[in-house]
Length: 76
Image 1: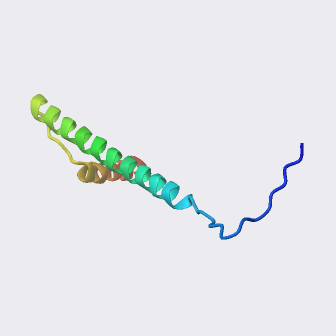
Image 2 (image 1 turned 135 degrees about the horizontal axis):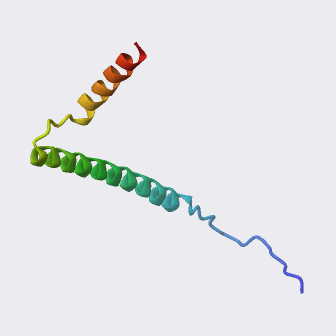
């Protein structure tokens, strides 16, 4: 069986990449927001646990500074 295709008169080429690219960008943005939310909830849990245990809580930025300080002290 042979299929013969011929160009049609007044045919319109459809580009279906736009919706797919929009969906991909939406999923990436949603994943980024979920990651930020999980990180925020984790920091909140750590903070509440430190309050419960009576321990000093160091936020993510101050924790990074402490880790850098410990690394420089360990190298000496």
